[in-house]
Image (cartoon, rainbow over all chains, first blue to last red; front, side, top):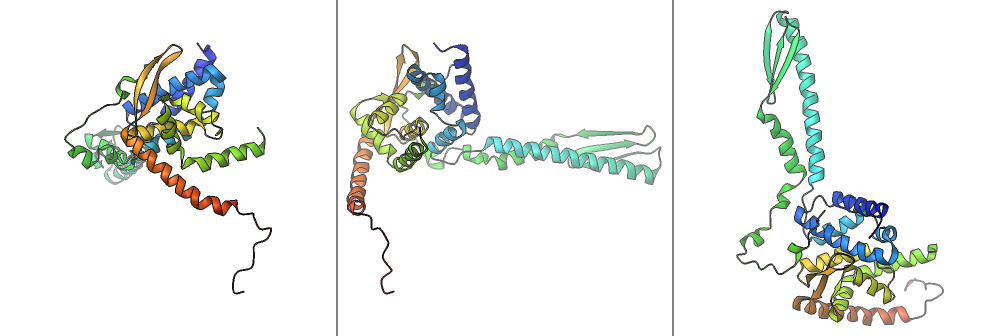
Length: 184
Length: 126
């Protein structure tokens, strides 16, 4: 039974690997983690956990090997999440710039007492000159932009099973994979 | 490990990359094994340059391709181990792989066994 430090070392490696495997389906990742744990335990009995983990190389490289072993292009969820986040930040920034400009311009043109409204890409902007307030309300359409960006940037269509496999009528699972799950 | 040994290991690793699948199938044709056991058997055969990090994904690929099947065997010293065995598809792939390897050796061996000339000769016609 490895000590606390060795267990932490093993867990850290597994978690780092899992992060890099994030483009694989969840069940597949669980199987890989489970099998790898068993292999590391076996290796650790001979060379210790530190060396057993070191012998596996960098988690990113190992994960790339597993991804390549899938034999098909995978969706890139992490990339998609970064792009969607970036799109959201850009949208909020544009919205703020537009709202401030609208508020200043509107007040200058219409006088301080006027209550003026406009819309910008799914958001409604209200400026009240008298109260010197600016409010922005969003509709559900705002979520459309990051969602579309995520779907495109992550190449999410790759998650769909190939047409040939979908058309296949019979499937006979013979592997024990379903039983090899990572309990952690 | 010296720099030369590391370079040799890396070189060996690159050379073996293309035939790792055949090697794994050949070992599994002898007996069922789990991942780390295969690594040990490969190293014991003298191929110390083969890294664990290349063996496990290669096994995953063979499993996906249906060339090996697997079953779980409980272990007294840790999590259950996934033992791989050859399938009929794997047997066929092994035979094909060995034949391809033999053809490559038949071509390469006579070429590489000739003594290396000290200087390359001038191009013909010059």
